[in-house]
Image (cartoon, one colour):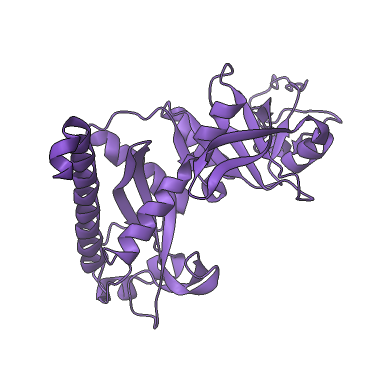
Length: 313
């Protein structure tokens, strides 16, 4: 899962408003779309896009009608659009993937992670340093239900215990980070220092939520940096090696290549219309063109493998 932005001028293009624009690295006037990609070591290609409509749009139905937004389309957060894309792919018959990848814009959200768990989907998602986890199973008490009729208590109590932020976990274990090379990059081997340990999530612990299931906390801390660079929560088997965890968690680079190719070569961000249906037609054609290029690359690669002499000729 990921999202990408389209800088725009004016206020009439569907979904446009001042918001964070990744293409510019700052807040700017533009559109944002959430996308789902199928990726593996042989390549990557998008399965679907959803245009994000801010509340400034969905609360103004006249404005929506002017650009053809269907009446049934209401406000949805980006993580909700992401889960909707996954459900749509499954409805088409797409097989469940071995793991879902997403950045901290999705990984920080406990509701998104829970949505993946409810769908039986393992994940390796980025998180920010302030996410809190239990490094050891906490003890807690559940209040007894009152004998008299009335609402049952829902909160549980952790007493004086509290979870740690993942930044605190990194600092406490700073001596345990070890150097690791996980793949060859365009400029040589990719190498950094990593630590991985089993933790439990502490989403809404202050509201009395029970600890989440046990999973991996993976942290990157380059030797030359004063603070860790990346944090990940990985709902993956305990027997996986640290190197394999890193390889999986760092697999999102292929999606960035998808965006780059679709924008630079296929015109993803060149749509000059304003309407809802026009934007979706444009993006659909770009996805088809991108998939055609991927299939051509696969066909040519297979041809070279089968008959290198003929291909050279």
